[in-house]
Image (cartoon, rainbow, N blue to C red):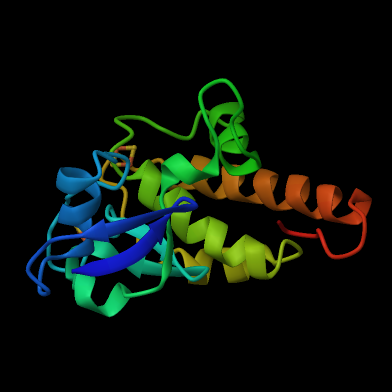
Length: 165
Ligand code: FES
Ligand code: FES
């Protein structure tokens, strides 16, 4: 059994230790935001955050996650109250088919939580592992820029200690 926290809720998972995190999220926990693209760590569709870092969940065995905190796209906000990253993707209409978008958001979120003041060049470099077969990369980059500006502003306005939360 593996105990891990997903989007703030503790779960005890009965699964083979080699089971990819992606399968646990989708099949055991019913969280379908993270997508199965290649299953080989080559497309980024399955990206989630583990302890604040972007992780490819299709090639991450659940046994490595004992006691760790996982965040999926469902943890960024809701339909009624989208988070800054989700708001930015909506505002820029960054999705075409949408399949890559949860992974894009989670990789970008990991970067912006560390540094909302990040440069465009750093965003491009950081997003390199995530692919979009629809070719909406420019809108995706615009959305991440918008989210960064929004999060930086919120951080500047927040009481000390809350920046980037
Ligand atoms: S599905 Fe995980 S990298 Fe492609
Ligand atoms: S929007 Fe279709 S794969 Fe990116």
